[in-house]
Image 1 (cartoon, rainbow, N blue to C red):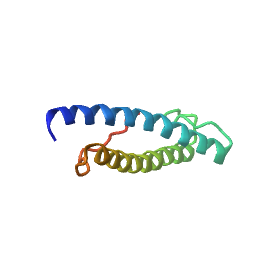
Image 2: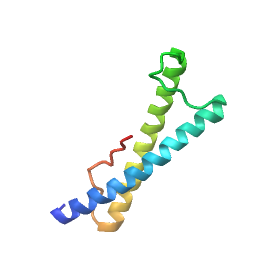
Image 3: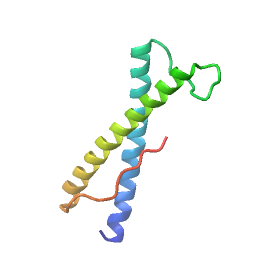
Image 4: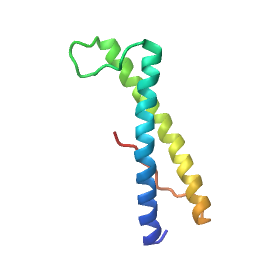
Length: 96
């Protein structure tokens, strides 16, 4: 991958990651509200029960993990179709 392709990949992966992070955050929050009927808790709030805080953290971790796998696969396939080369070994990093 030459310098220009690296720049394009970095721009592309940044745009994909920002969009994926926003969608993932909304999806996890919506799933929590659907299942519990409540808004997601702040796990750092001492008034939130420990079990509920842990459940929220696990839900977020699972949602982000699944999203990371799906987005990396999507980005690699699109990159391969765009460049005609093999898939990029550089992952898309989701940051919240």
